[in-house]
Image (spheres, rainbow, N blue to C red):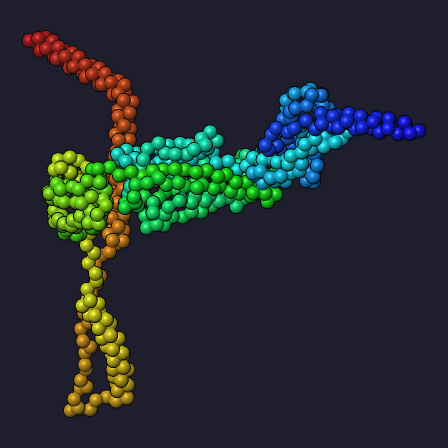
Length: 545
């Protein structure tokens, strides 16, 4: 028995060594990924009642041991409605392998990364844990900032337009530097990426906001800039856009400026979808840059005015002092020909780098109504064009409306009062007179009662109004038209009567010819009878001797 115990102890030690070796061989399986991330795209929800989508993932494993390893993938602490099956794999000694897996994911996250559980690697036989990592879900934003278009003026004064595809361009930087004191216009195009066949309420995006945060407000005029812009609700697969315009300050220092752009919205399940981008622009000044900053004419539209005034402001935006700046204002028809030479403007870094000019001109009396723009040209070094502007000016026909005379109105009012008094007194006197005549005849020698006549009333007739003239013209026109219709009817009647007579003559022609022939025959017979009588008479005369 004594010899048996030492042997048993040795056997136990050997078995423990074998087990430790086996364990150390199995423990050599490791996860080589820093993070295990699955990519969830809710655009795969393509049916109204769909609850889950299949999201594929993978994990990279390495077996650093000398023995083959049979492992299994297990998922723990998954949120509600997430489902994942067990996955097994075999790794040979020294092998590195990518093991795929699939998880059923519901619509229960906003865009971005969030932890959804733990991925554990176990020995398939002993169920011993070999390695584990946090499982992260990266949800694609269903709100897409598809394009950003920037329109600006570069340092040389040339208009530029640059389009960024935000999915392809990681860095959004303008290719050319921007000119100070100019306008920048940004156009943002956005889209709802939910499928239109998915539940409409869940797929609708609401509370859309675009936030633009510059890193330095000195870029803007008066340091004011609206940072938050809103949109209407956006249905599945719908698009929208927003245009934002701002002016770069005249006195901004040349530098690089970064805009942090954030676009956000909530889907129908109150999960937030967000997109973040950065846009960089740089401001640069050149040596010679003198511009017209103000060009005004008062009044811009004239009618009965006899004159107008022009106000101009020019400013040096460049880094050089300017000694020979010229200003020309011209319009031949208005007779405006102003030439202001040798204006001195210090460089942009100095405070007195601007110049104001005001002048006036007489508007020609015989000039017809129309547009008469004024051409303003700015020169540097006496003959080099630096800037040019057109000031619009419009001349309209002068129409003077005379107000009603105050004296005439007063006279009419006084006349109405006099008329009322006279009418009343005349009626009263007439009633008294009738009473005297009815009561008593005047006695002989009595004086006849004196009769007071009412004063003569002066009446003023209003002149014909435009309505009266229009009515008169209308009546005259009607009379002329009726007279013309009557004349046409008479003419047609005469022509018809003439045609009737011609037809009668044509029908009577054969009868007249027949009558004429009968008359000729009768006359011929008369002549023959007369000749016969003459012959007989001659015969008788001869026979008588």
